[in-house]
Image 1 (spheres, rainbow, N blue to C red):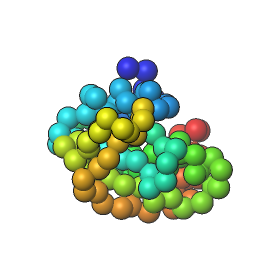
Image 2: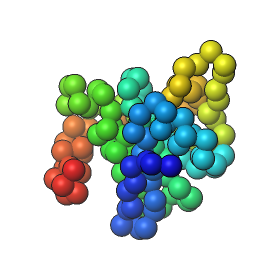
Image 3: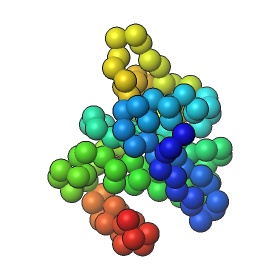
Length: 124
């Protein structure tokens, strides 16, 4: 498990995938009730909040997902992130490595300014 890791001020551990193979491993360790994030567009890490969600952890996870996405690297604009539970993730045989389906999700908009502020705050 060579995921990127981030610990919030509340002590919550967040795992961030690095590539398709790493995303595959990340999803294997997600528990049913844990929160997972992925951008609406392809080319994003899966992001997993370990354990119970606290305070602004959901927003931080969404920002991390957007920040490490292909869309951010190429366009530097607002990004739509999908937020869902581990129990809603599925994989069929024809899906390539790092690709998953999601039964139900909520959309979050991560603004460009939020990513920029996060990068400055954490020197990323």
